[in-house]
Image (cartoon, rainbow, N blue to C red; front, side, top):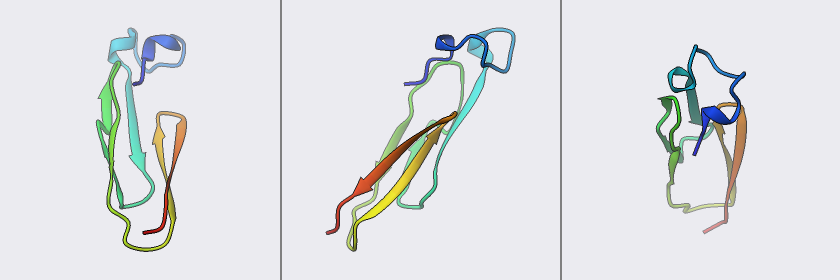
Length: 73
């Protein structure tokens, strides 16, 4: 979950519930929900099944990066 109220000076509007933040994956096998959200919100993601070698992808949420490592089949 992302809470804009946790960093009141890092927003883009007069009140925290108006701040917009985004999330995105850097690989096509990770799908991210809640890609652009105003105020507080949750980021959900789905990882496609892996039929090959181990792989690594990243999800960026606002200014934080989460690394997803998926084992080989």
